[in-house]
Amino acid sequence: MCFGNCLAQQDSLNIEIVEVAKERKPKRVKKVPEYDPLAPARAAFYSAVLPGLGQAYNEQYWKIPIAYGGLATTVYFYIRNDKEYDRFRDAFKRRLAGFEDDEFFGQVTDQGLIEAQRFYQRNKEVSLLVTVAVYVLNIVDANVSAHLRQFNVSEDLSLTPDFNFDELSGKTSLGMSLNFRF
Image (cartoon, rainbow, N blue to C red; front, side, top):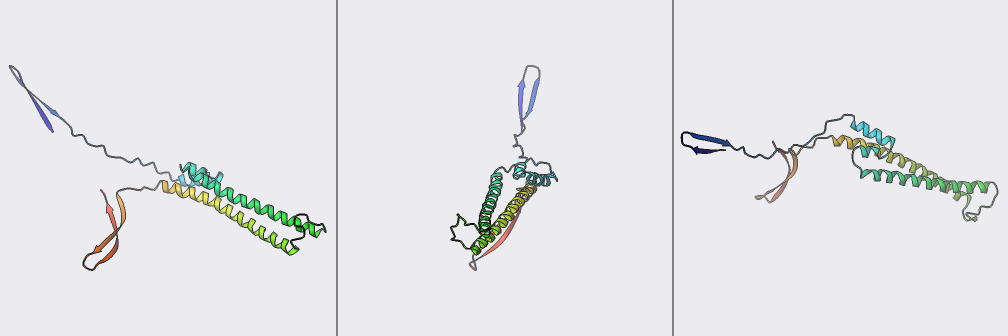
């Protein structure tokens, strides 16, 4: 746009042209962090050293209590099953040595003590396997989250479901719509 001012004086005519630039909205530029190929390995290493540290590295702090809660729960059950196993094993050993056990007052047979030992031994082993699985899951989660954190998700490309109703036949068809924005 151009606006002009005309000033008349006695001897001369001054014409001043002032251009006013259109105010444009600045383009919204999304800051994309620089790609770091070692970030997933670094996050996995941190989680392997100290569970939850990889999640802190990925800035997903809400996952840290979940990781510690899972590990604490499985460790609790391991310790509990170990104590029960030791209790039944000690009672069985005392019976074999010829002592009267005060804990069970003769209500549990020798075969019952052996079965209880097997039960708690199995539960102890399962608790240990689940503890290792939760620990490994913590490491895998940190690695995958670091990979996905660097994944470029652009709003310029979208894939949406599309429902079409055919008025002539009265049937509905399902399709996919792929949209590009330039």
